[in-house]
Image (cartoon, rainbow, N blue to C red; front, side, top):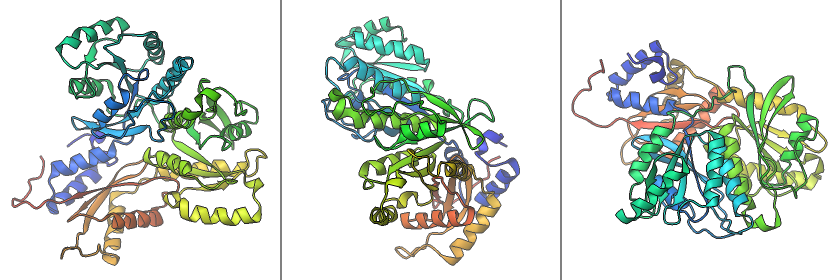
Length: 487
């Protein structure tokens, strides 16, 4: 029998009973075990790709994720709202944070590279440091090396733009950076990326190094205040802290060190992961949204709960939606705080409620608080909403109860017949929590709409308020032979 760790969230007795059921339904036991283990792993480890502009970071990110998603045009004004991607190598999945390199202002370049690297390294479990082997180590590269040493994260050194044997000597010269072996790579052509990714897997932990809930059991829970610029994050942090801990002036600098604030609220000490302080300097205007996205991604990766602030005086925007999607995709508990509520007149309130109905459907399950960071209105409702979201995030449904529920749902609402066949959910289990992750085993492919229906019914039955739910489906493949149980 496998040990407890290999069972995901299942105990020994529950695991044995579940495997008996899987064998009876004709599933390959190794496949079932793999599905539970994969779903039970929880948050993926995070890899940051850092380096100065024009060294080929985005091209390398595209190579790692296996598709062309990251923008590869390094020029001012190239704004990417998404900075985190999912990748897989040798059967292991992880997240990749791309730090771009859009800023080419000579005066601001060192500061901009440092800011990007700091935010990305902060969220990462390991780092790929990309250097242009043809140019060699520059002063900016040396500055990034100092940041990496200070952070103490595992580093894989990528000597990029090595297109053939002649470039190997250039790559070897980068030993001088003191970061260990330079991996000669051509991110454009794919040369050497496999060996580099093997080194990345050695550097990455199987699971994230950070422990949710603080460094020790009972430590303060981590909350990220996120939202688009000028939505009131700094004001809210200052209001809950009951003192001015964060500069609110929108002209404040962009490279201020991030600070995590320990704040007592509702008789409980919380750790607020600071996402405020990203403000537009004149020479950084085009990239301000990109910096905000990068820093938001870093804060969300470190947090357990994302409190998403929405400015109620403005129309809910595409940027608001992207920030929400970032938090949902990261699998964090979520609270929606509608800020500046005290500034609304009746007409705006009416239209806002319509916007919430149409634009916020993807997080209709999240607790909502209507607050004013300026006046402190309804701040006392923030802690109960956060606690509700955390409770949903940690909810665990026993396998027996889940399968009784699934049986009732399938009997009352069977999957539509498609092509003369009617796929059925045979059984399922919750493989993990934080957020809740379910694996359903079915006789055929389940359509997206039916999966959404199952998620909705799960929420109605078991709560899960304030948390995303991940549902994966494994289909029983037709095979002639009866499966053997794994000894």
